[in-house]
Amino acid sequence: MAAKIDPTSQVSQWKDWHWQIRHAIKDIATVERLLGIRFPPEKRAELETTIATFPMCITPYYLSLIEAEDYENDPVFMQAFPSEAELIIEECDMADPLAEDTDSPAACITHRYPDRVLFLVSNVCAMYCRHCTRKRKVGDIDSIPDKAAIREGLDYIAGHPAIRDVLLSGGDPLMLPDEYLDWILSELRAIPHVEVIRIGSRVPVVLPYRITDELVGMLKKHHPLYLNTHVNHPREITASSREALRKLADAGIPLGNQTVLLAGVNDCPRIMKSLMQKLVRERVRPYYLYQCDLSEGLTHFRTPVGKGIEIIESLIGHTSGFAVPTYVIDAPGGGGKIPVMPNYIISWSTNKVVLRNYEGVISTYREPDNYQQIFCDRNCEACTLQLKLDDANESKGVGIEKLLSDYDDTYMLIPQDNERVDRRNDE
Image (cartoon, rainbow, N blue to C red; front, side, top):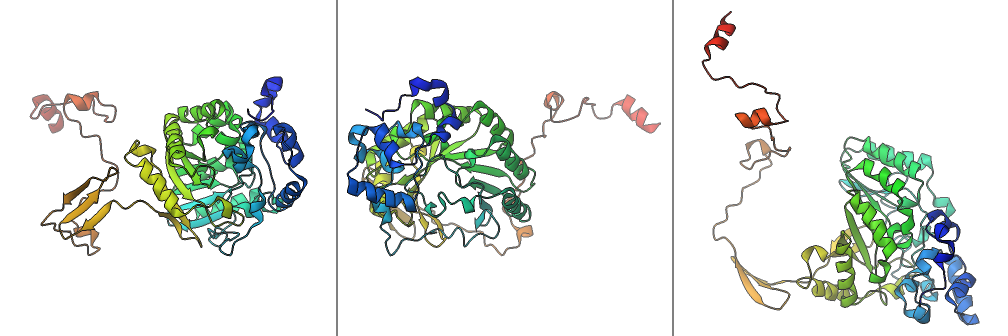
């Protein structure tokens, strides 16, 4: 039995995302009342202390997914409700483990990779995830970027032609008003070297009613636009979240998903396989499986890396290749995402590679005996490889095909040595 929230009593309001935000649950007493539970005084005091450090915010929708009878083991509850374990700070924990602030050359910008930047346009979320890597910013009103800060970020992107890919994150960009987000996207689209815009959002999971027809209509004006969501457990995929994902997919927005490996929530091969298969059914491509970061207060969520390897082993070969995410560790100190995968190469000689497959079958791949690598002296003008990097020219139709095409202005074909045309040219 789920939480005692009756959406049928106020149907029109329940699906109004503004109503959901106004009625977000931020105190323990409301959680107790809605779930029909009661915490012992000692535990309640510990939870209050936790909330004072890391605030709580849960949408009524997301709270309604919790199975109250077994709330302590419920994957939705564990992601949304605070734990006193969050106050345990290990020696290896860091406030900013990914060095996002250190790699910030301008307001709202983290520039780590050569051709792309992270653009933190909001610090507002529909829900505060307990495993958030940016817990240092949750509820901090001083870190909300204003329009001047956004402008500074836009100017930085415009001033660096190498940036071709911009990832909007936060907080959650979809918590911004439609008009404001439209302005940011329009400003980015006006920068000639920005080819791709991506949005990272948990809204389709924790507040699916935010995905309105108006929002989707605005987003589709800014293609190529990609959206990565954040689903961690199969039970987070509901009729409402499916509808939100359908709207986005039908608008031509490619969808990906970034799952965080969380102890007690999804550290199980069967759960992960079910999640990945449900995602692809909803046209969401599994993108990354993240090892939990070394942020402060996340020790109880972290698993050994071996658990992630085990999960990937249970996926490769056992389900569709496009349903297998890349397992990564976001290296502390700003080292970036490092893929960590099972080892399928058993041995290697000068012309043979010994491989094993997901079943344990061992086979060999014969490499070429005489591979002549092209020596690269950085003299691209003399290179024998085809360095034609621009799009291929499709306007090579001849004869009647050229007349039928829409890409060529030719409207007449004249045989060679036509006397009338030759006479015209002689005059």
